[in-house]
Image 1 (cartoon, rainbow, N blue to C red):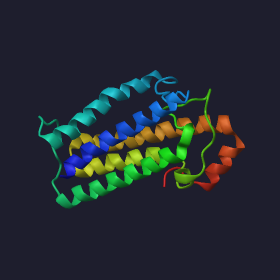
Image 2: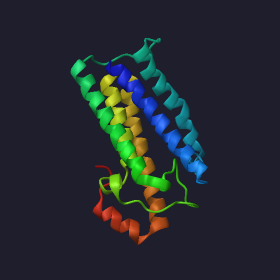
Image 3: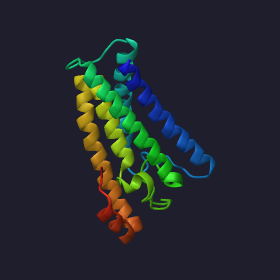
Image 4: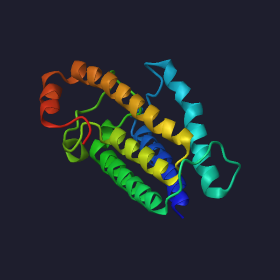
Length: 187
């Protein structure tokens, strides 16, 4: 049962991002900026597809890649709860973001600086939500490859956050600096 939770969580994330990007595109806002400033971003796609396959294979009995490190029903349910918390935070962040939502950096049309809602709890609630989902999925499907994904994902999120912070300081100046003093980077 919990392995289906992991698969549904990933599906929900993809649907939520795509739906929000499509909704903004209809309003004339190009929300997907992925790969525009750094072409290496596209290297993420094959790794994301492998991650997706490992989770779906585990849930639906397809041929597996990698070996599970342990089996614990309690840890799997804790993982399901962590996934649910990640999805809730992600939805809250999407709502809080409004029309400023972007996938990737957009220095040309940045939108307003959002500091309310989920952004009053964390400067990076979407990356925090992704981190929770990664951890939750690993607890559900404790595959050693997914453990690598947790560490690599957290490192990549932090790297992207640092890049975005430089960009946000350049765009919003003192307003962003003051926001950084009030709100933590993660939680």
